[in-house]
Image (cartoon, rainbow, N blue to C red):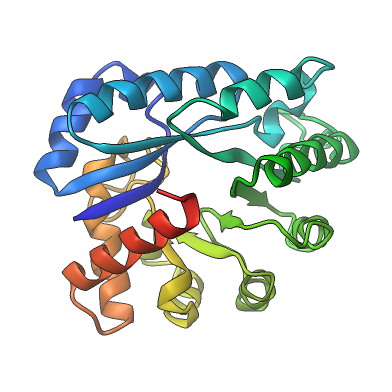
Length: 263
């Protein structure tokens, strides 16, 4: 059995074939998932989708949050709306939140929120997570110095740095802060030896596997729309790195996800 700790079933590509996505996941023994919200609207939809999936026998849960690329959408009402969403019976985390210093105000084609705005929005959501005693799902893009710095200001926080692709030195710092590392199809890419090195270094009790569907499909599906049924390909690579069976990795990472998300 496998637990997909990060997928976006609200995305257009997957929502259009929601029942098919679930059927293929079940056939691949992916029986649980964390459905990630990244706007207020997608967070609402993620919770509703989890209600449906749960009725079909899935161990399905949602995270609610506002992504750093959408930080300019934050307003005076956002925090209260997010607090209400976090009280949904299927909500178990605040996320996807974080810092994205690629898509900031300096991006030549797709300018996003200024870094200062991203950090302000992140801190408000982190404070909410502490208040509600919920873990966080963190997005980190080109913010290897700043995101751990911000997280360190919240000593009671727990969570996962999802889609981990940073250097080993950053991984050590994140692990020292008590966080989990989430590994995607990146770990299967031929040119991603550094990601495999970090995955091999990561203690098994801090390791999560995820698809980040519909993005980052693993080999041999690279370049195609990703979905939870592809998760065993990530698990197989992790198993090889740790000299475990794929079944052992499935069990270990499922229990890790349940522990982190209070399932």
